Length: 145
Image (tube, rainbow, N blue to C red; front, side):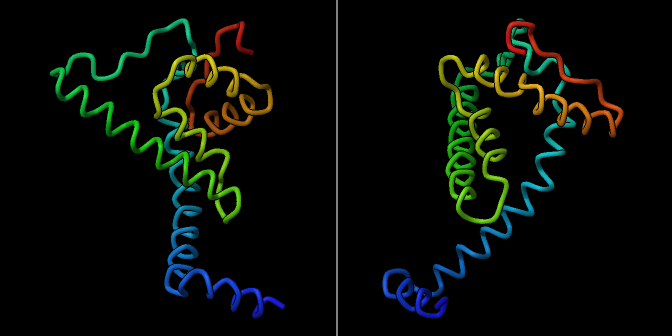
């Protein structure tokens, strides 16, 4: 049954592309297992507190700032697409999509992030992980808990 499915799939997609998808899927899975804890540990405790401004590259030259924002949005879009693909392939799709969303700039983004992270299960999981590495718990604005 699986061999029939692979044969039908190879009629539409070449075998080397399927192998590439499989290898990239495994690499993304391992990459997210390593990257997500590192990112969560490096975040300042007030990162998701919407009461505190979060300027990015404000002390840089305007051209560098524009280039930086473009690169950050492009990387965010790549993470968002990769996370979506991981919903169907091996990997931490939802977490990867959240990282992508955190990099992309759009109106209301900070409030949305704080609402997602402010959910009790998400916040307690992240804070438990941060506690293992002697990091302070994340601070969420009261209206986003």
